Amino acid sequence: MTMTGSTLETGTAPPVPHARDASAGEDAQANWLTPEQQVHWRAYLLGTARLSEALTRQLEADAGLSLSEYEILVRLSEAPERTVRMSELADSLVHSRSRLTHTVSRMEKRGLVRRVSCEVDARGVNCVMTHEGFALLASAAPGHVTAVRANLLDLLTEEQFTVLGEVMAAVVRGPAGGVTTA
Image 1 (tube, rainbow, N blue to C red):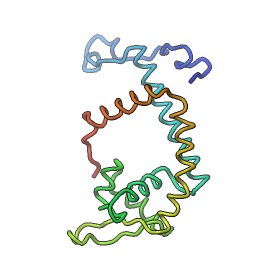
Image 2: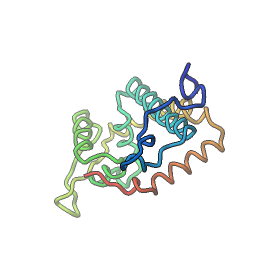
Image 3: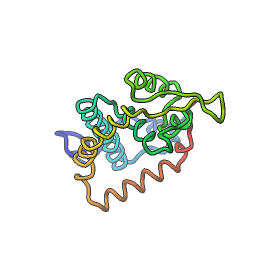
Image 4: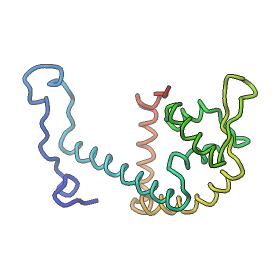
């Protein structure tokens, strides 16, 4: 990954004004990233943004789905009876309940999912994948997998991909991993 004149090309971070240069105050005590850490952090941010954009572009062009909608269909397809409680779905996707409700409403209008009252708890609502939703997922999946391979897996060695998975698993277990969205 190179960009002319960029941090990623040169391997050095450009000078950034920091409070670490301050003589006092809370910001002076911050544990700032080293220049090398800044390079890797910025590569991560740029890489994840480009990957997300490429996957979204492919899904929208080929299936008329956003990446969030695709992930909802995937989660439902893997669940018993293709049904998941809305609150559990929001938590598994790290979406706010409000965001999930809006996304599911759009999908419901397209006939991809439906919402039904939870039989066990009348206060709860389940999201259920329809036959149309499953058919769309089945037709979208091959193109999505091709895009994931082209934009991530084919760029890495098997070892790099394994390390990436281990790193992301550590992030999930870390302090932000337990955050739920209300």
